[in-house]
Amino acid sequence: NAGVTQTPKFQVLKTGQSMTLQCAQDMNHEYMSWYRQDPGMGLRLIHYSVGAGITDQGEVPNGYNVSRSTTEDFPLRLLSAAPSQTSVYFCASNGQGSWNTEAFFGQGTRLTVV
Amino acid sequence: AQSVTQPDIHITVSEGASLELRCNYSYGATPYLFWYVQSPGQGLQLLLKYFSGDTLVQGIKGFEAEFKRSQSSFNLRKPSVHWSDAAEYFCAVGARVANFGNEKLTFGTGTRLTIIP
Image (cartoon, rainbow over all chains, first blue to last red; front, side, top):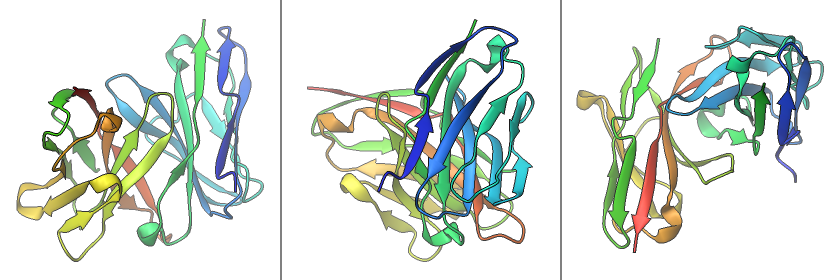
């Protein structure tokens, strides 16, 4: 059971480039989310999804797009990378009725925009 | 909107000593509260959670936390720390997503724990 898998683990982008961070889970979880982690700021929610075809914005959505075509996958797209998007990105998933479940986190993607 | 404050950025404790990490939250309803731990280069792992009932909750690795509604606090404790407890600790509050049984987590800024021999 792989849990939550994020790829790539590391990425360097030039300003203006686009890329997609991949996130896949094999636990049949309905709820998935993306966070960014910056020093001194904890984790901040970027976007989340409560099921296939349903997404919504979190605290810091600007510059990021998401889609949820399947239960398993929740990719995060950077359309035009900026240095301010240099961060560590975490994907998480948990099941419906998560009062009795826990969020499982991926290992993170460290992104540097130069 | 909910918020979480972890007033201690960095704490250093001797191995074998007791530990208390502070967490204060702001939320208009009954909160769902969590403590997560992050080892260097790793994702987050759930230590414990509070939803209702007994205000003293037990977690993994010998950690416990006490929910105090009157103080809006959810402090994490461990009676005797081990060198392997060195990590970053995050408190989080969950806000129920309308019509869905899930919570959006709001995290504190974290407390880095250093253990000295």
